[in-house]
Image (cartoon, rainbow, N blue to C red; front, side, top):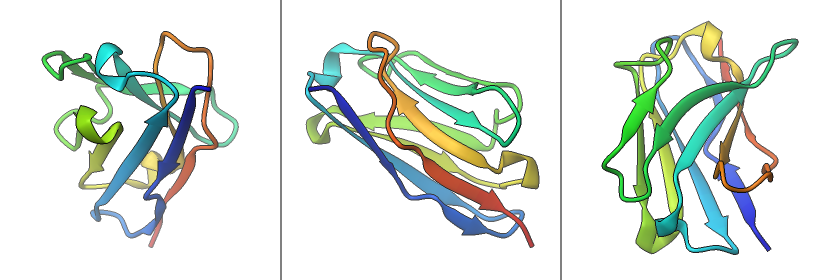
Length: 114
């Protein structure tokens, strides 16, 4: 059974940092491209970052380039999103996903506010 469990969200002040984790199970992580999405209240889900199966391909939304870093540890079946210089507009529920599967986890809430 494919499953994604996101964690690491919370409340942070503008300019702060958070590291999100995504524990994947039910499939061989090393074979799949992984993504992080986010969804703010009243908005559509937005693709934030993508990482290839071996980590050789990485791409970011323009809104997070230079501030966010996606990485993966296939041995630990985990994907990460390091978020620095956070802005109030980064407030959203963050989800990880393998595009090959039409399954979403519960997400983790990130709130950037003073």
